[in-house]
Image 1 (cartoon, helix red, strand yellow):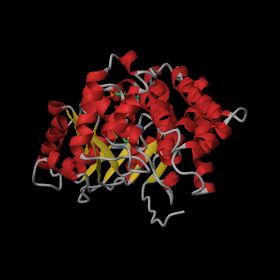
Image 2 (cartoon, protein in one colour; image 1 turned 135 degrees about the horizontal axis):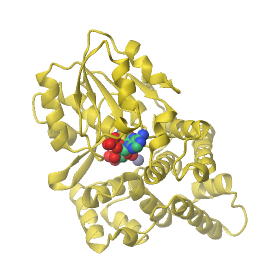
Image 3 (cartoon, protein in one colour; image 1 turned 90 degrees about the vertical axis):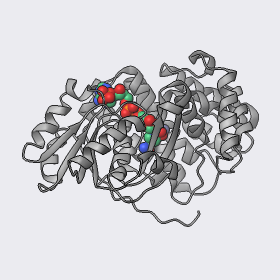
Image 4 (cartoon, helix red, strand yellow; image 1 turned 90 degrees about the horizontal axis):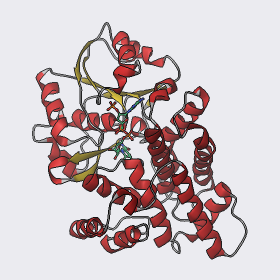
Length: 380
Ligand code: NZQ
Ligand code: ZN
């Protein structure tokens, strides 16, 4: 196990009716800006619950943070926040609203254009931020990352700043998620675990088993929730799996991959394809192309999650990759680029971008432009 320093300061407030605790969690002397997406919260009661909890607080609202939050929208929010001297942010929504609000929280403390912060990749001067999560998927409610897009240039980059001070997770708010949003949330959760697990074998038994615990949970509940569900216990497990999947707990002292995400972000940037849907296509390709490098972990995952124990090593690896694809397909997601109308032109552009940026992703730092091309070609 590698050395590590670990600190996750986010307070989790979990359960039915817990949105009401906003009234005591945010100090009364704060000038709050509450941020929202496109309006789903008005249709499922979340907006009313937030409004009533903040009845005695001083706040303004900012609406319209879109899926894959864009710098163009966030600049407007930062301007509004500065104008009103906002010193506390409350993000109410999915990963996009939360991520966008992380950039707003840094942008409020920065004099230049916020895109400069995204290009820097990190900015630690921020105003405090809290969240009411409505979509289990990204883990953004309990991590310090964000992913920000620029529509003008079709770019999408990761950015790091502050952890939320607290996050409220009420599983009942997920009852209104569509089949597609649940499927993409499951795929995202699954691949977050994989990015921290599907690397080098034998680094930590405890990390392996925490990851496998989440993978098994997600595989077990998926058939019951994949069309959307209002089963409180199942959606609670989904919600907590997503949060635990990307809050740092699975990565202690072990190597990480993230090449699937980096390729997936380009597919979203270039085609607008939903984040989780990109991963369902790319991840099986990563396993195919890096099967030798990841052999030990693929075998362990195949045995412990899918009970694949028969046959030669190569047969077991093949079967494990097939099972993974079948799992994503069972959620109604595409597992091939052509199903989404994506072809060679996009592969060439992603290869070009990776080469131009000089990047080499993955636990072995070997996923360059040409390896990304191979991964995408294997799932064309
Ligand atoms: O905008 P509204 O009207 O609220 O509707 C949203 C949105 O259209 C809707 N929705 C959310 N909660 C709902 C609901 N509809 C009905 N009922 C509810 N309870 O769902 C749509 C998608 O929301 P979005 O926030 O975009 O989804 P998600 O949470 O998957 O976030 C995706 C973004 O997070 C980034 C992705 O790249 C993408 O930009 N990621 C962030 C990460 C992080 N911060 O650590 C890691 C991830 O790997 C990911 O890259
Ligand atoms: Zn993700």
